[in-house]
Length: 543
Image (cartoon, rainbow, N blue to C red):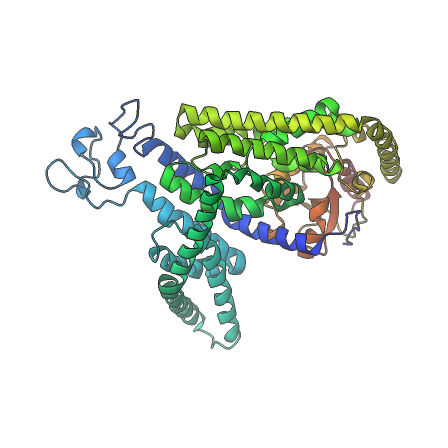
């Protein structure tokens, strides 16, 4: 099977490197988001200020609060038959020394899940086991949740395991493989755990303290909104996962553990700026950008797939200034009024934001909603001014660019296509023509496995896979496997890989023998019609 050479812009080496780092960081966090959400809900419900806590305004003290939050607790106040009677001590059933679910999850479960996932990314199951053992030493060697420690020790321990196995690869006598593998991993895990306890843990504690102090300094001087100057441009360059999961999530969890919520969870995940941008394109955009923006706004705001608005910003780079202003306005609102989330909002949907904010009480929810609205309004107004100022020029360029693109695509297909009218906004620097250029390639083998790949492998790629799956079904083609995954997980088995333009080069490096199709927007790219046509023609020709 030959590899197509699609019209994708040349990638900047530094940016690709940062994207790869972001993919690896998100690869450690994203598969475990469900655990973060579970911990967040448990915290929201059962800490003293939670819905069922001792300080709850509802007075629902019948819940098993003492057992869940840990520490003391009078079982006489708990109407829970058979509640942990084996752990009670003395008169009144005081739960002395019980660790509790809230603290145990944030201290042990979440960091160990991250470490295991990181180890598996580097060296499979064997790397995951050693990474988990080593990270346990880091955890017990500190007195704060060790998320950063897990994100460093996990992959490091797996890499060391990989290098160790290379020393005697192919040199073990038959029959002794299991013995050598198990003992070597166990001994290495022990050594790394001890090293983590005495050396690595204190170092990570110092780093966490410095980072936490830096955030506190920004908050104290009311400079935290300036972070949006970095965050918003980085997002549209597909560096959002590196920022959110590599920095904000671990620091935010530490803040949430102490304060019950964190403003850091809303710096990158706030859906307001993206909503404001898309609404501005809806009312003041031109051509395909205007036509597709309303649907994109719904997907972005309620589905939480922020990547869908990136092409709109890239098609008009000056709108990134509007995103910065909107993001800063949202951060300022939360900073001044004390808004925050109890756990990461992933994906950044208003639904997930609501669930993560409601535990802080009605006022906190109002503040969070206000931050989203203000961010959307500020972004909308500035983007509207930008679009109105260049409307005449955009109308002329839109007609020429899209006309040429549609003609080229139809020429490649050999027939007219009504779907081309739904083409979404294109990328900057001549990306409109490039995005619509045909992605059809000649395959030397039947296409049976199509993979949509994005940075994290969950949001936009899942949406694109669903869209193409439905198109294939409408065309009467139901025996083609269409899946989505992270670029880092591509293993070269896909017959055809579909990625957004700025990620295609990385996908080619992971799966060089696949057909690669670059699209500008996963929602309704014209290349999908070409892929369907390619598959149909193969089936008709009996290939």
